[in-house]
Length: 109
Image 1: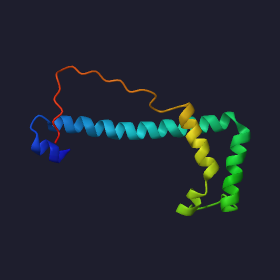
Image 2 (image 1 turned 30 degrees about the vertical axis):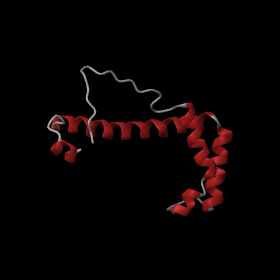
Image 3 (image 1 turned 45 degrees about the vertical axis):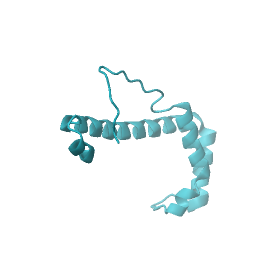
Image 4 (image 1 turned 90 degrees about the vertical axis):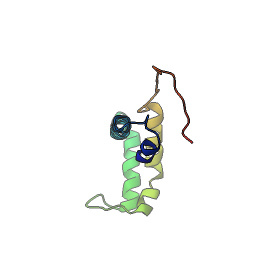
């Protein structure tokens, strides 16, 4: 964005600030919402929650003071499916709408 600002005087520091705020807020908000709804879905379906716990016990043997490795994370196939299903049912951003308020020219290149 800074490089684009240097090359295009119409893209101001204020524009950069707005873009960074959007990225930062959007990233935190969508992650928090996704986690919250996944936990909500697990709380509503104890049989699914039990299968997630069983998968974790099969991978780690115990859940006390475990530091998961990348290989452990890759083996969490059932949990991955649960997360994807929760995101499908409760998408953090179901729709994005924007409206232009002025004529635009998209000459980035």
